[in-house]
Image (cartoon, helix red, strand yellow):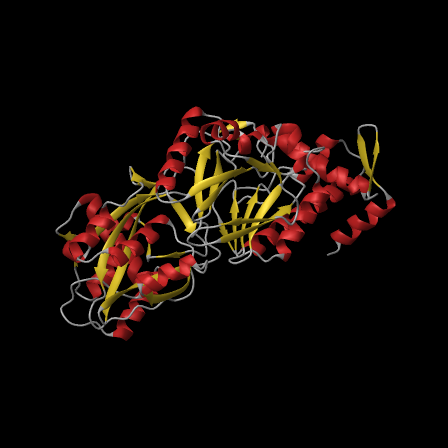
Length: 512
């Protein structure tokens, strides 16, 4: 995105709870993890532990051995676990009947009964000793949806089984920590830091005391916020505060590689943010991850704001598309479409360079064929639609670039702005449909008669804040310019009007 805005306060986090549910299997242990539904706004498609936000009603349920917010967190953990898996972590006078539990679970999910009523029906009570505190994690301020989550380590009660009913969750299963980590390494499971830390803690610990210490005091965490975000092995996300377009306030810098490492888009112009990135890179270097180059996806300042400082500090070469020369000056390696960037390391990686103009003429994406991960720069954002601003931006080129990326069927998108996206092709096709709808609105506005750019903009964007109108007007101009080149729109002074071809196109869309 082009620079225009430095973000304000981060979103306020909601209190939440999650349960690390375990059971013994042979000489080892298994954990119950769930895959979140693709339709969810937070962590869609990711693997996680059962859990969710604290509900006001959770504060009314008593817990033996706890009170206040600590009790509410335990109630939320127990309620969410029951809703999502059917496991009831409560002290009961007799073993629960599976059919009765399923009926109460269904009633709870349909809001026919509250959790307090479920416990009362079974003469059950919650005891804090059944919920071992296992860490507290706060979603980073760079994301629009945030949670302050307390994790609890709990054992599967005898005689109960964990099952997922599809809805918010797509699946659930028991898995050994080693198997889960292998799936993450293979790009088959995407894990947020709390989940990854828990799996590593189980794999590395030789006692319950050591396990709880690792869960409660994880590395790379300050004030409950984790700086080390490795949703997929070999791709670290490091959000940097930048001067960018709303609603974004950060640009994700990606650190790619398990040995040799690329630093993609160090966009912060703030010296404090630059120093924070430098400290993190030095910590990674001590672990054997050594940066070998800076890659710039495109020339906008929120992507290259820290390039010069990082190059000077570490002596790294800068790699970018040849058209970025006029903005960057000297480029040490000119990236061409089809180039393959090979990185050695414990997990060797190859990245395919894709020239993807549209948002900017020099825009490139990086595609990892093994896992189909796509570092998509500003081609796609999970926060909003992408700003196209002619003449540097070109809507026809942008749509062609999106079509090309969709054909790759990316498993996950790592955008510069917003959270990463599981199911990349679906997201890209969603963006293509959005652009088609917007173009349809522009044609419909002109079908009413010739109109100025401002009038077409207001028709195409019926609900938009006044402060965003200048950006909407530039986006509308990009659409009109595309239609003009396609001979669907003509220009008469300050007025835009449909040609015969444009009238046919507008009629066709109106009758769909």
